Structures are given as structure tokens and as C-alpha cells.
Length: 542
Image (tube, rainbow, N blue to C red):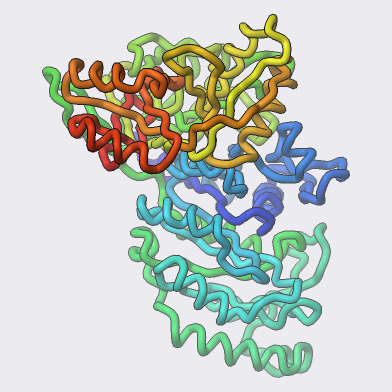
């Protein structure tokens, strides 16, 4: 039995961008046009009563930014689309990084006034490492923006890959007239307004050039000229090159005004790849063997790429987000967590429509499903219906900032430990417990992570904590070839040893030279800047 016909219908992609490029608004519009939601909420700052569907955490509503990645499923043109919205803010880039391991393609949103910004570069890097195909959407054309040729040129330089324009803008800002579709050889006329549906926009064929000139004057001729230049200078459309992550199609539009969004939705269906094979490892007679898992395989397997605690304030549940890699999920299946060998009995299994969750009837490769559990599942866990497999590729980065946690009311110690254990498993923050005892340490990639954890400890676990600076500036996970070597090292630096949430041993550093000196003194110890979530396979570069 093969599930190929179902897996071919699946498209799983993430939206990536710099903060404020309009990513969450575009997510809303894609949902609106697929018929998944009736009314779209734009992100309008703090006071808007209707918040965007994908931003549900209190702190997100206060700040108008996405902190946790959210998942939404919709059906459009007989395709099941799984869309993952990612936090744009760099302080949450780890979460985004992990989300990108669960998708088959990415939609990159660029603010037409600002071009490619810092955070987008980091995300591109991640996509490039994995050869993830990228669709580019240049947003906010209804504002005063840069010349489209300039933007194209910058995207090419920054991405390190050729662009192929699929639509082209006529005018910009106040004089923004619409977009020319290079494939259908027609122009869709722009009208402002967030209530506009795709069918409300007028489309005129390019062959009716006199009419278009009469309406848009010089702007139309200029657009034709720059479009010819762009087409002449850019690569031909090559679907295979796009699938290999070597070419990006470029679309222009205005998310807030529902303009140019439909073209992007169609591109996701027509261009993006369905789920592909994934590499896993199996143990055969104590030897690790590589095994390729095909999406249409009969047996069920999936990987946990995100754990979210307390999505529902009334129930202290935790949801493990699982990307299905093969087979079919049906309710009541017997599932096993590979790391522990224990049976997984979720209280409920859901698909997501952002805040709305629905019970899963069936799920295939490419789908994202949520298992509600009360613990026992961590990031990077592989879940199967029996076969012993382990997927890899979900990294943790060594933190660059540290704070000490001081509890204001010592009677709440138990709640604090529980809160930190859960937030550590979720990957919201890295928690280190010094071997010598003393206060717990929090490690993060960005300052905002500390603020979110402090807020969540207070609201979800009723723990008021103070975060204080400490002397540590970095950490490295350590391993050795023999237990003896490791023990010698630990005895030499007892003050610097700590264990993280997964019980992996780490060496805390106070300056960049620490690692170098320790390395010289103990050449046989391996220092790792990355560790895998699953099973602690450590990356051995220094």
C-alpha cells in the first residue's frame, strides 16, 4: 500500500523575513484566500482588538511581534497546504531554525523599501545549507519604495542565487498601478483596500497596450522597459534549479491590500515540491546504519521539531509539534518515542488552524500534527509506529548570553524547577544547572528571550524571578573518548561544569580564550558549539 497520491497533494512551507516586512499579514491573507478564515486581522500595533490569527501568546499581542512559530493548515486547489509562520525577531532565530528543518520550501518576504535585511540573511543561510527552495515576495509596493531592478539585484547578491521575475510592478507608492504577470502576459490593476478579493481586481491583457497606456501613461512604458531589462538580465525559469535551491522566482505585491497574494498562493501549489525522502539512522547489531525514508512508505514516522507548553492557559498541557515524514497517522495508533523506547499515549492529537485545533482524522507525510502530552517528549525526538529509526538535523546552538535566576519567593522553588524544565525542553531558553550547586543559569541567543521567559514564569508558573548578570559569556558541550579523560577535565574545572536540560555536560566560559586555554591543557577533550537535540550527537568543530 502506498500513500503517494496523498503525499503528492501536500505542500509544507515556512514564511521567513526580517521583522516588520509584513510576514504575519501575508500569512493571514493566504489563509483568507484559501477560504480558511473569513476575516483577516492585520498586525496594527498594540491596541487593535482583532489580533492576527497566528499570534496567540499574551506577550505577542502586547508587542505586535511573533514570538513562537505557529502552524496553519488549509486546503486550496485540492492541495493540503501546511504553512508555518516563524518569528522574525533575531532573538528567536533558534525556533525559526528548527522550523526550517520541518518544511520543504520557504517563502521569503522582503520589504520593498528596505530590501534584504540582517535577519533575512541568517535565515537564507539556513535554507542554503539545506538547499531549501525559496519563493520571493516583494511586499509593500503601495508605498514609496526602491526601484524593482535594484531590489532584484540585491536579492541576487545576498542570496547568492539568480532571480527570475514572475510578476513585475507598474509604478509604486501613490502611483502604483498594478502588476504585470509575465506568464499570462496580462496586467492586474491595483485598487487599495483590505477587503478586496482576487476576483475583484481587474485584469487586462498586455495586447491591449493602448488602453493600458491611456490609463497608466508613462508609468506603464517605464515598467515595460525595466521589465525587459530585468528579463534580459535574469535567468530563465528553470523548475529543477528552483527545486535544488539554485533559483528563486520573484513576485511583487501589497499584502495589506490583498494584492499579488493570489499569485503567490498559486506558486506554492504549482512550484513548491511535495514532501521528499528523509535520512534516518537505524541500529543494526549495534552499528549505526543510514536509511532513506520515503514519504509514501507504509510505516508511520515523524520528528518533533517544536514543543510548546501552555498553549491553553486552562490546561497545563504541552504540545509536541510533529512533522510527519512517512506513512499515515490514524487516531488510536500505537506510537513509540525512540529515544526512551516508551509508548506514547497522547491525550489528543490535533491539526492546527492557529488557535483553533481540530482532532486529526488522518495525516500523511508533510503534515504537521500536534500531540498533547504531559512530558516525556523532547525536541528532536523521533516517533514511529514501531520501527526503530532516528532522524537527525535539529541543532541547538551554544548560547551567547547568560543570566542567573534568582527566585523572589524561595517557597516557589518547586514551581521554578518545573517551569524551567518545561521551558528548557521547549527550547525557549537553555537551562544550565551548575554541578557545584547554586542558582540556575539561563543561556540565550538574544535578550528578548530572557524577557519572554521571565514573563512566562510569572504568568504560567506563578514564579516571580529576578534575572541577574553573571560572569559567563559562552558555553561548549564537551565529550571525551574515555570516561577517565572526561573525569580528569571535570576535576580540573569543577566550578565551570554544568548540565543542561537534556543532561548533556557543558563547560561554561568567561571569555573567548577560555576554550583555547582549556583545549591546550586537555588536547583530548572535544568542545562542541552545536549539539543535536536527538540523542546528543555532538558536532565536533571547535
